[in-house]
Length: 381
Picture (cartoon, rainbow, N blue to C red):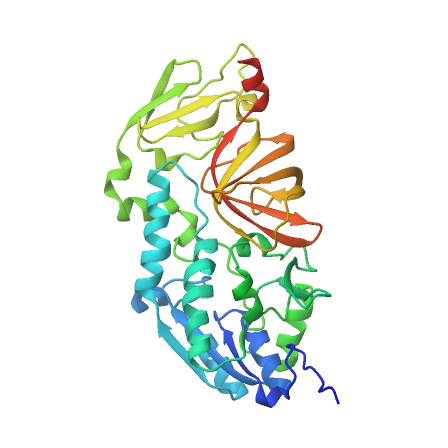
């Protein structure tokens, strides 16, 4: 007789299935934990403290901060399941914050949320879950884990495309995916809020965090300057034709595609069209500017790739978290790098960002952008 499989995919009763839930203190992870507990699972909540506790108490709207830790603990107490707080401040600083600062010095535009998922949350926290004897770990991310006809777990975009977090989770490995569960991926956010109200969770109306968690008010330059005082070395702002147009106070103040706040005024031609940042040259400490058309790129090189399957050829690709997927051709290389040939040139593609590939709604994986080219210019040259 075949034993029924529970909602998390295990052939045993929920009460015999231990689930570690990563609780940030927000409504999504709180609903995930509370619902699984309501369904009879052996739930253990775990929250990571990623900041100095005194500083965290003063910061609102971020995950894993002082008030958020308190909220997660209260939810666990009120629902009646155990909850642990783990001090991962040094891990977070080394794996995420230090790299964040170094990336800006290299002229890159980093995505610390991906690094946090890749290291602290889906590496260190998964180890804790295993040590606690968990059958799986659940999170409140909006992404779907679907099992195909061969019994293999696949990663798919969330039903709520406005909340979909697949771009930030492209580095999830197959081994991690086999252990992870995402109960909210098939819902709209409104349903999550409704369950939070029904369950009487104290953070049911808590707003979603908007900024990078360790960057108060979105002022990333302030964080970088504090960690790397040498980041404010002045240098030249140069036009792509070699003309020096002005001076800057540190390349960390500029990103690829930036148009406003360049500090040089005027336009680049008789029509007074605006300048854009088209390149950052950290070795020469230069900011290169030019017309918008100089930003066009249709070849993207990526490294440190993670793939869920062996797919290559036509794909859809996201080059920014807020952009829609565009069509491209994926060419994977034996050295672990890959290149993407975009069907339509894109503007403002920045090294340090991620290129995430999809086959319809399925997440195929991706990598970190380290270089771009314009094939039309190469042919013309």
